[in-house]
Image (cartoon, rainbow, N blue to C red):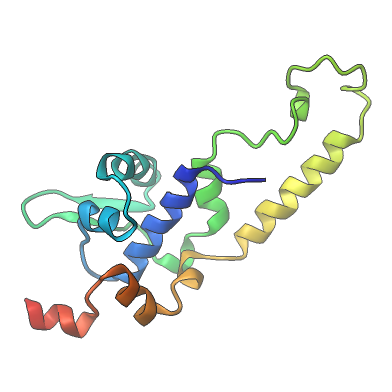
Amino acid sequence: MRLTRQTNYAIRILMYLATNPGRLSKLGDVARSYAAPEPFMFKILQPLVGSGLVETVRGRNGGIRLGRPAATITLREVVVLMEENFAMAECFDGGTTDCPLVFHCELNAALRQALEAFLSTLGRFSIADLVENRPFLSETLGIPMATEHAALS
């Protein structure tokens, strides 16, 4: 199974925000960190905000931040939110097919088990797990560390 670009960047947005805890981030800064167009990132941000994973603060000094602690946001939750379709074959879950075995084939059962194993594994990892090396991520993404941020204020 291959995740879409949108899912990949949704996870990256959440990682950025988790690397910058307790502070607001500008979407433009997030987009620049990943060399991604800001309109593309804005499109990805919408379902994250709608689901409460990210919250926005309006105004001149506004921005975005995690809507929940990073440790409570699982990769499974993000993938299920962002992916439109988990059909692994054209006949998955009764999809359109001309295969005569569609209603008596064990392939669908095997694919369902594989998908559940995949999602179950993702459920064991949180966004916090992905940002354990916060100093490296901060440096790589250009996010000032908390002490630097306080000195800049």
